[in-house]
Amino acid sequence: MTGADDEQILIERLRAGDKTACAQCIERHSPAIYRLALRMVGSEAEAEDVTQETFLQAFRGIDNFEWRSSLATWLYRIAHNLVLMRLRKRQPFFVSIDMPVDGEEPETTPAALLDWCCLPDQEFAASETRTQLNEAIAALPASLREVFVLRELEGLSTEETAAALDITVANAKVRLHRARLWLRERLSGYFTELVQSRTEQ
Image (cartoon, rainbow, N blue to C red; front, side, top):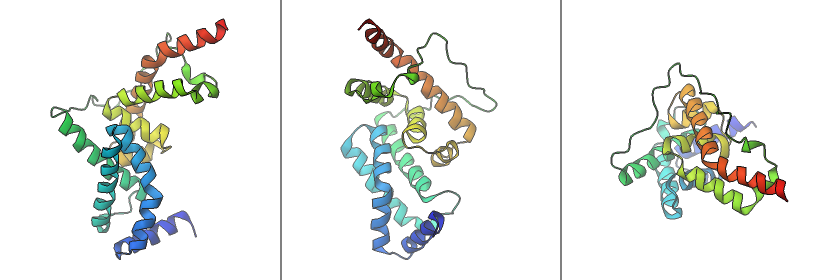
């Protein structure tokens, strides 16, 4: 049985009100939904609330699932909307920083920035480096952070990311590019010092 067949059966069982199917769905998808929520809201308690609300909404609205995306992508979209509601409550005048992207080409990366992506893997395994990266990701503007988290941390394709956030593929690409540039600029000083300290040893 293929993964698609397995998912179809799961959804049919969910629509029939099968409680075991609900438990299987939660077990299968809740870790990823929780990670996304935690990255976005920054609070374990709120992330747990978002995760619970995501599955409650999903199970109540499972008859509206239209098969245009995977179940996981649909759940990400529900979680994304719940997260945005919470962020808007914190920032009542919350406005997306994104400009229209139709026909927009990603800008070139400034040559002066350190290409820290090419550092050895062991550098990223260090606790201090992980902390720097996590803090930088947490500081990303929300509309950039959600794309970066889904695409780079959760491993969704650009198409899946766009579907989860209900944006165009072109918009997802531009936001991802902006997120990468933003992180490079924020972290370039730290990684420059790191490289210099390694060469001096």
